[in-house]
Amino acid sequence: MDQDCIFCKIVSGEIPSDKVYEDEEILCFRDLEPQAPVHVLIVPKLHLASIEEVTESLEHKELLGHLMSKVRVIAEMLGLTNGYRLVCNCGHDGMQTVRHLHFHLLGGREMGWPPG
Ligand code: DGP
Image (cartoon, rainbow, N blue to C red; front, side, top):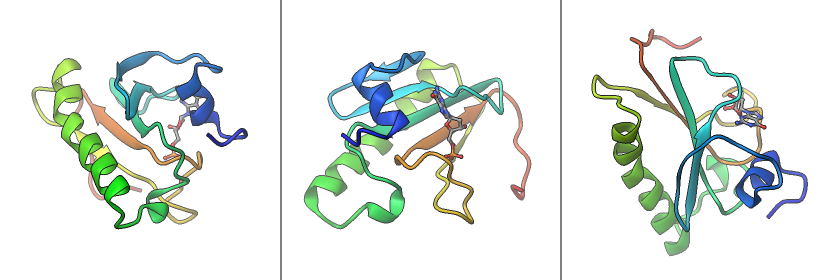
């Protein structure tokens, strides 16, 4: 846990969140500033500042594989039967604002492309 990390505090329960899904490895909760009718964040409980910190270690491969395998499950729980978008912002140019790896799952409307 990173003592200064908002998402670590959400994982530990120190900061409340609207939880959608939780297991031993990951947490999914609703985004505070939703950009679509459905907008949740899926985070590993392990503190990794961004996708740039993901290595080829077995631990990271299993963690990220597990997280990815739950996207479909969470989308189904949220009723996203018509598709959705999964976004991972990274670093300054990716406009990442919270330095704890997270995936935005957005749906409930048709998305635009290209993104801004
Ligand atoms: P990003 O720009 O990719 O780093 O997205 C960070 C997202 O996190 C942004 O959409 C707003 C959301 N967010 C920031 N602080 C909180 C919080 O305390 N609670 C919740 N639920 N979401 C937060």
